[in-house]
Length: 122
Length: 109
Image (cartoon, rainbow over all chains, first blue to last red; front, top):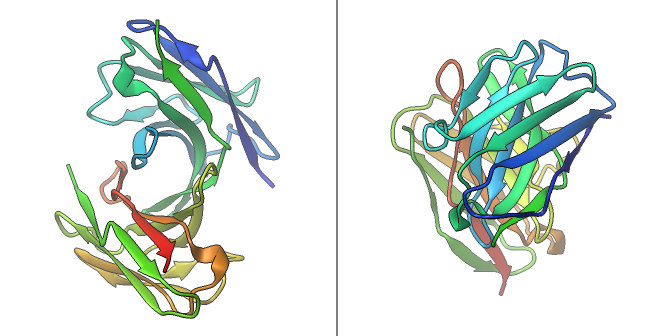
């Protein structure tokens, strides 16, 4: 079964760029059947969709983050990545990666990685 | 942007109770609506997709219904492991842009 695992620094300084990677095992990011997504959750708050990327490199971003966000995919490593610039305290959250399953026009997140906590502090 | 509003924000119930959580969309989303369960410190888990299709392995006490702007998640007989936070999520539009509800925390009475 497909498993996803986030990796990256747990601490980022204000104004710096966050870089996270999601490694996929048991499946391939080089599949036209799925999108690959990032979702975050500030402590004690709701889930927020960040964006997703297709194996071709086509990416779709949340309107609220698109000016600071870059997603990429590395099919040779079976990974996809997130870069979020100009980090502030408001960006502190648990960051999840997830596969977007697709059936016709229906899409849902399954499975999810375990999440990685990112703190923003100098 | 499509906004998703869940009610109630929190709910206290007892084992064996029947519970219903509501999710409303700010515009019609047909049945492009999914439900997730999240336990503390864990990643969300998919329960229902396309408004009413039960994900494989999810107990049949969970059910979903609705279309357009009004959706419900029902747990027919609460079990101890069901106490968690539940989120709805829409996937309307092509290409899809996703939005989650604010969550409903289900607590033990």
